[in-house]
Length: 586
Image (cartoon, rainbow, N blue to C red; front, side):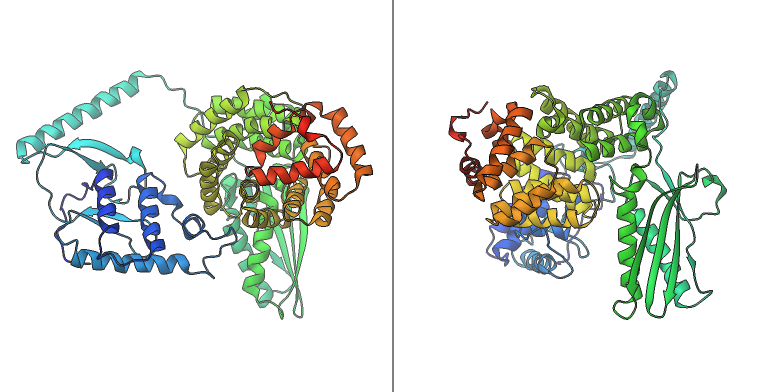
């Protein structure tokens, strides 16, 4: 990069409008030598940073949005993002050496990441015009969004008198703020509790050697995997006295017989010693190295325990019948109520989860996850209303949107919040916004099975069947959560690609108590020419879900975004003998 005199006032950075004009100047210059996709790359990372979404500028997000890569994109095996970032850096360096020597704003993309950096190239002329300053002068990347900027005025000529006056004013304001805090009664509540899990030292069948190394390494890997989950507290030192009342203990044993390795793990509820989860993992050290085995086992253990539907949140289902009482325990009880509801999908469990989360948001109004989960529960009153036996109301989407907006205002980059934003946007008809939020959620927490599955559904039903179905298959194979939900997704994927036999197999495995699932099964049977069995399914739907049968077109339009996908579904229903064209949409 050229040698330039950078403004010594490090807190001063270019405004968003100045940055946008500079990007336009660069992109239209003949001296900016970069291909179209590198130009799109630069525009994307700048716009996302100015919008306050710099945390989402990961290789996966850029590859998915800018380069159209599928959800299976692996940045370790596909270096496209790193290559284009290198081209941008070189093209920017050349531009500023040749055509941009007199430009006031310098844009760079520092190595080691994809978040652009903005600065003035020299002291800008003194002015009384408002300029943007950072709350944190160390960050020059607009990562905090528009709320990280504040308006101030740059004085024409700084003086000791002006500086002293500014200090006096600042002290006065601080003192006034302190007095107001002292005069205001506080009703602050303690933060919600989270389940604590002690990771005990793993035993081995040999006093030393390979077995001991694997036992120690495996325990370390499990600790690392579990700490990815925000809903639990992981205790790495089991001997610390302050964690004597921890909820759970993870115990393990490593056994070696020649090259054969077995890892036995179990989760114990410490209050009564009950084993609430246990599993064995077998491997061969001749077929796979020890580090790979440790990493694989650690991921499986962490998923089984700490995913939203994992063992930790499934140990006391009776609590969901007492939402008013269980909410006093904090966020673990409501997480339990939520996951139990998604496992059972009944009106009772839905009501318990909704009530628990409503009370939780009242007691902990600054907890973004509570608001996000509550938003999802409201959305479910639209997408799962037939399974829950609920009538369609105009309030559900409005409540879901309000709860989601509150969550976004508190923690816009939280994966749970992004998931809620994805669902609300999807069922509001803003598909671009939904997929953008889903991409960010998956990039932020790709190991979360629920996020992967929900994002996969949104991609698929938006017409991106290949990438969406890949994610659904991944979620299903992880073996965590509502398996039937992903099975009906696989049935829909097979149906849309024209594999009717596979679609029928998946559909028969799924939960046919859900009327929407049974409607898909009816369409599949029609496409398969099995009209006799289709009549039985139609009779069941007429009896158990008459509102759905009178509103098929509307329900399909809520889910399948492309007219050709809706028509394929309807053609299957027509082939089953259902007179779809006489059904009016509401």
